Structure formats: structure tokens, C-alpha cells
Image (cartoon, rainbow, N blue to C red; front, side):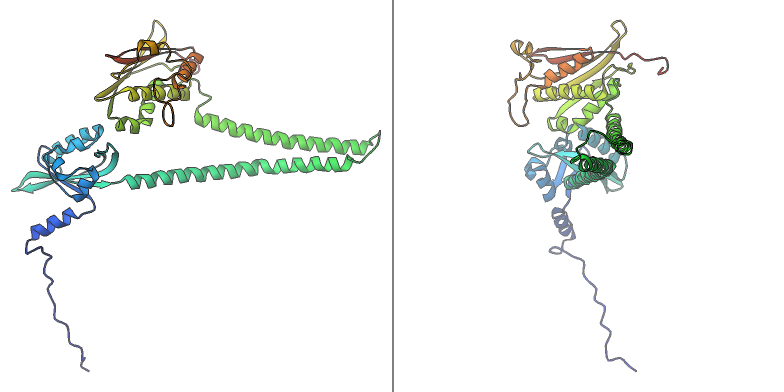
Length: 389
């Protein structure tokens, strides 16, 4: 049986073209791409930036072309980008990393960065950079982390509630039973059987109350151990590094450079990790807020055998503090900053002072309008038992 259907002739689809110019098509596709695309020369100057790149940086093409690509990045990313340019020029085919672009409004944007070489005549002639804005991804990751935390907290609350609820319910029932049994009794004598029942009930109530108390005490102990509140010694260098890491976003937004010159080895400081973290966070925050252009902060740590003290210096090249204000910086509610939301309450340095003093340490501030400010902490060294050694 022959089919009435005829086989359709094969039609060759012509390649997409723009006015017969394939290069024009490719340029149009790149221009309309969702990801930002830059073409750089071998020195890192921008030769081309597509529409997405212009929107990401918040600058028109004339303010991008001819500029060094590193100028659109934050300081830590500039160091990495310069290194990657050198590596790709030497023949590395693909480099991927996560960097940060700073747009025209000084907003720091996390990006997924890919750099590849463009070859001409078997040599690297230009550099191709593809950039993807991952701000939304980071937001979703943060939301997912917060959601996981909330879920863990809900499970914790639920478990704790059940742990305490049932003995409390039994305690209430036993109390109510005693009240109902003896509320309307008018007597001067209680029989041995009733006396035994009363004490048996009271002992049960005591046991249930004791169980609730021990449960809450155990939970409190766990939370203190996780928070490190039971530890009254710490590694000062580690606290300094963690404090800087905590303030990383604020430091990058302010375009501040922080250098550390920390002693290779320090004895443990006689202060809690959380308390010293609060102190260092406040001192670094104050330094960042005092800086203007080309801001620098240097943090040093050292150990004085003669004084048996750990010394921490935080030095900035900011606007400094006037002589009149310097004598009052530790006073509660005194501030040279504007008050209000996200401003200063004037309690920061007063709290720092009280924390350091409570651990038998000292804090001193030297400042002037030309050299900036130096904050010096002197912390006692923790006594280590033979067992700890």
C-alpha cells in the first residue's frame, strides 16, 4: 500500500544574520545579553561594555570606555582582578571568582566574575569578562539561612515546651486536688492516712518542680557554653580578626583599608571572648566613621613581659577628636555624632570603658586633627593552671 503523503523536502535554515553581517548579529546578541560583558585590552582598560554592564555600573558608555576595569571594583576585588589579568595574559584559559563591583551610587554589588582570553594569530590579544549580578542569589541564601535558623528555634521552643509543660501540668493538677479535698474541711485533727496522702502529694509536686528547674538550668548552661559566656579568657588575635570580618561590609562600603600587625604568639587574655569582641567592634566602627578619603586603619597587638600585659592599638588617620571633647569621650551619653536612628546614642565608649575596667584592664585615647586617633588597650594576661599548661 502506497502512502498518499509525500515526504516534505528538506529545507536548509539559513544562519541568522543582521543585514547579511554575522558580526553585527553577534554584537547585537552581546548587547542584549542579560549578563554584563566587558572587553578589555591587555592592560585592563575597557574597550567595550554592553547594555547590562552600563546598567550594573550605573554609568554611560563614555564614562566606562578607556577606564581601567579595576576602578569599578572595591579594593579587595581590584587586587584579585589585577592578578587574574596577568594570569590570563600568560595563557590561563578560564578564571572564575566572586568579586564586588561598586556602582556610581557607591553601592557594593556582589558579582560572579569570569575572565577568558581572546586569541588572534595564536596570541592573546584582548580579554573577555562576563559578570553576573548575584545580589538576589545572596539575598535568597540569607533568607534560606534565616529560615533554617527560625526552624531550628521553633523546634527548640517546641521541645522545651513539651519538656516543661507536662510536669507543670501535673504540678497544677496535684495542687488543685489538694485544694478541692481540704477547702471545705473544718477540723482540728488529720488522720494518719490523710496526713500520708498530703505529704505524698507534696513530695510529687516538689519532684515535678525540681524537674522543671533542672531542665531550665540545663538549657541555660547549654546556651552559655555555645555563647562562650563561661569562658573568661580568649585569644585576642582571633577576636580582632573576627571583629574585622564581622564589619567587612561596612568597611568595604566606606572604602577603608585595614592593616593588621599582630604578634605571632600571645598568651591568653583575661577577658571573655564576647566582651572583647564588643570592645573591638565598637572601636573599629568608631574609626571607620571618623575616616574620609583614603581612609586607613592599623591594628596592632603585642605582649609586654615587663608589665605582663597584652597591648592592642587601633590607629586611624581620620579627623581626630578635639581637646575639649577628648576628656569627655568616656562619659555616658556624650557623642560628637548626630543622634537618631542608626546614629550614636553616646553609650558606646562608656560601655567599652566599663567592660575593660571590669576585667582590670585600661583604655587610653590619643587624638589630634592632623594625626588621627590612637586607641590603646592594656589587658591582663590570664593565669593558666598547671593542668591547662
